[in-house]
Image 1: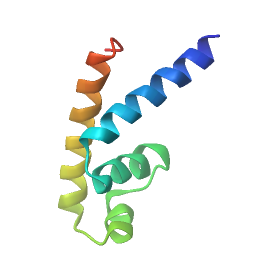
Image 2 (image 1 turned 180 degrees about the vertical axis):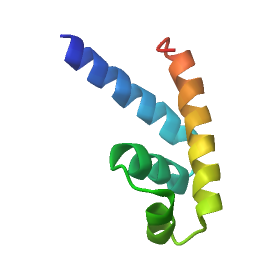
Image 3 (image 1 turned 30 degrees about the vertical axis):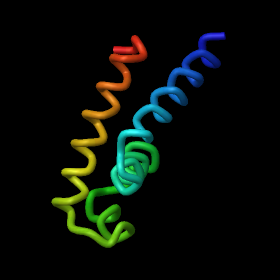
Length: 74
């Protein structure tokens, strides 16, 4: 039951954050944290600079943190 509820919480968290983030920012987060890609790899995939990737990740983490707080997960 714990794994299912954790999965449900993660899905809710990502859905809430996705509503607040530009697609590129969410994609950067998923590529970095989900796939373990480097800033340089993500920049090449996204067609942007590594500085943009870093900024996108920072904004994505802020949005996820806020969403987690709203969902009572933080």
